[in-house]
Image 1 (spheres, rainbow, N blue to C red):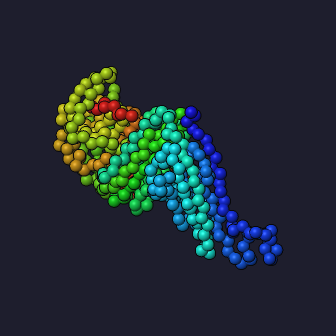
Image 2 (cartoon, helix red, strand yellow):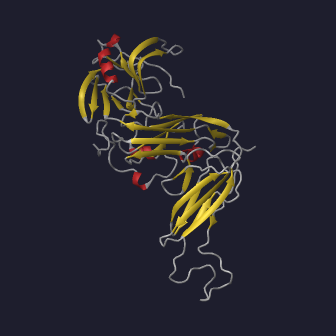
Image 3 (cartoon, one colour):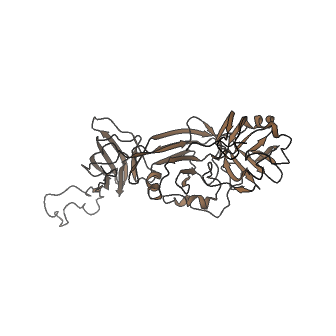
Amino acid sequence: MELRRRFTLFAVTVAAAPLALGACTAEGKPAGRPAQGQAAPPELTVTPADRARDVPLTAEVGTAVTGGRITAVRITDDKGGQVRAEPREDGSGWVPAAPLQPKRTYTAEVTATGDSGKTTTRKTTFTTMPKPTGAAVTSTLYFAGNRTYGTAMPVTVAFDPPIPKEARDDVQRRLFVKTDPPQPGVWSWVGDGSQVYYRAPDFWRPGTTISVRAGLAGLLIGKDRVGDEDRTATSKIGRQVALEIDNATKQMSVVRDGKVVRKIPVSMGKPSTPTSSGKMVIMEKHQQTTFDTRGSADPYVVDVEDAQRLTWGGEFLHGAPWSEGDQGNTNVSHGCTNLSAAAADWLMGVTQVGDLVTIKGTEVQLTEGNGWTAWNVTWDQFVRGSALPVPAGLAPSPSHAPHPGAVAGGSPAPAPSVRGG
């Protein structure tokens, strides 16, 4: 069976007034038109079409109104159960809070109210498609619930296999983010389609609550793939912390709320295994872990403490008592940023996953997608990665990207490999 079942969502427009029995009114006007001075009820368009079949499991109740606004939407299944749904921000439709079930019948009843108070109601009943049989695209939402993240935390969704360009708009329409207080952002794709990031033009304001839904279960992706799961999470943004590391001085500046609170000597990657320069984000934190590079050109196994991941390729901040004599003057690591045991332990109590780390002056630049690289580009470059039109209010501006230590909200001031070292 062809995976993508195509169906026509015929728009059903409700007449402006009830049908009249005669051809004309007493005043000689065509039947169905309101008398002069009498307000017409709103015109309402609803999709899917009534009696539509093989409707995708990710279908939404589309609504369009002329001369009014939507005032009620009720969706029920064939057992009479109510289907919870939320409106899209642009008012184009209502999105069920969970995927629809295969081969089930649903009824949507929508009411629109005009400025005059007159209403129009339209009911449509449709049946969903059988369960898709295509190979699943595995998605991973890197935004867990009930956590506190740093102000540079991008919402990240990763895909295996990557999403082809022609399918990214469909996938992006099923990715939802809400912030409280509101701080709108944009989704942007990594070039190869393996990850998509969501962030605002500036860092998140401390205390912001972020709710995410990757509503991909049952989504038809391309010709022969289907989304795997619906995933949701809600977490908060914590205090403002940023790390700035300069290879020229071999020093790390720890910036909190826009002020440098400590400088720490570091040793970074030696010339044969240099540390990446760029803007990255703390991805994981481990009190203890093991770096195992057996099978690489430079194999070793070492236990480390107070390790904080920066890239998928295995660059970490971590305690390295063996290089304390080199920290502040010589780079000797395999690409990681080495700190003293005491400094690394202190730093673990200061940072959060989602804090920005800026490294400059090394021999190589951070590669797109090697970690959560949403901040390693300007806002102008970032929004170009969206597969959908960018809202006017979020279009590129001539202002510069915020300084890594700027206070959030201010203006402007898959499995990972373990390299370590």
